[in-house]
Amino acid sequence: MDKSNASARVLKKLHVQKYTVSKAISGVRFIDFNFVSDDGGDFHEVLRLENGVAVNVEGFELRQINRSRFNPGLVKAFHLHFKQDEMWYVHPLDRLLVGLYDVRKGSTTEGESMRFVLGGGKPRALFIPKGVAHGGRVLGNSPVDVVYLVTEHFSKDQPDEWRLPWNVLGNDFWEIRKE
Image 1: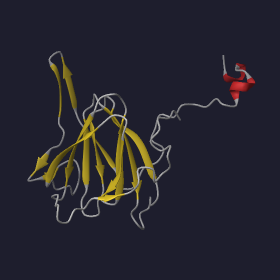
Image 2: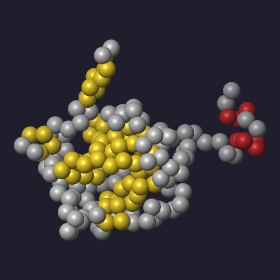
Image 3: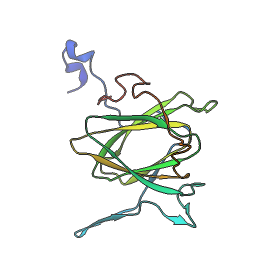
Image 4: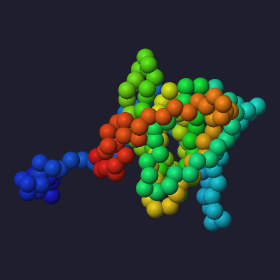
């Protein structure tokens, strides 16, 4: 059977599911990890350092490791930094919908946005360059912890924590969709 055998009413609504990220923001990178699984469990590296510098992310000099809890039902977005780069790690068994928005003046992808899932069975980290707004929404009923590594120390006196409204890209940006 091919799609020409579908009713006319359904045919105009039919489309093929997309399985790739449609846009990429300049400087954003995914860092895939080697994953080993056996009858005793599993193992993967989260980050390999040499003298405080990440081996698999050029120029990333680790200054601090943090954890943030994302509760189900809430959108925790958008925030950005102008002084620090950041790497996010979500456990592979969790699922976090991540949204990115490039607000860097003059960037080749200025104004572009991305949405994708971190976790979801894939052991990898996300590199977020300074000037790219980011946030997330839990896909599930349990909280998700994000471990994030940064290139600058946090300072209460001079925080590099800038906020944008959660819906700066529209109220439907964080909705679950099948494209």
